[in-house]
Image (tube, rainbow, N blue to C red):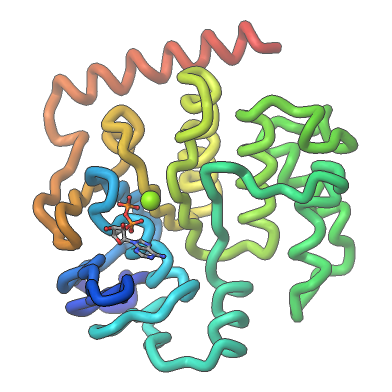
Length: 256
Ligand SMILES: Nc1ncnc2c1ncn2[C@@H]1O[C@H](COP(=O)(O)OP(=O)(O)O)[C@@H](O)[C@H]1O
Ligand SMILES: [Mg+2]
């Protein structure tokens, strides 16, 4: 693979967690490359190490062994301060429970990371409104999280993740707290972001329906990669994908 096309690379990544006398081997040597512009799903049973892997790739946690490279830069031994900078510039995070600030409006939630960025654009509020418009929330700018549905809150969270135009967005169970239709709309939003902005997206999920919308699926079992496949390679899956899109579009019509 052409090195320039690789945005994330892990090399023999391990993570041990000490629980009193017991050592839990959360990751046991994960080697993975993610291409620029790829949508990658990471699946696996509960406890298989998905969140641990995402946290290590995102520089939220440090590995016991192995290396993590983001955009060609080895982040494994960086200081907390340097890691924070890489996170702010390169990575947007989307979590299962949205993690929006309850006292801020949608627009303020999205503008906040722009305001704290080092290289801030001239008008954070305007940028926030543009992102929210892209996620079809232009009529919800001044709503607070409690005034929004779960799916709308998650789309605000996606807009916030995109605030500083990162090349990489990482989502941990982004549809885990949503009903099927809201989840489908959130997935559609992530795919639109991928297509329109070229953003690389990594999605951790235990939902096969969600996972199979990615360009590639990596399955973790007991902290190791057990399987890897292209979910769109079979015609049957492609047919299902078309059906799903139609369902999403008709449900969107119903929402408006
Ligand atoms: N903070 C923690 N302390 C102790 N054990 C943990 C902690 N976080 C995760 N683990 C353990 O590490 C393993 C992997 O967890 P995790 O990455 O959260 O799995 P997943 O996201 O696939 O459900 C599990 O055995 C889990 O119990
Ligand atoms: Mg998890």
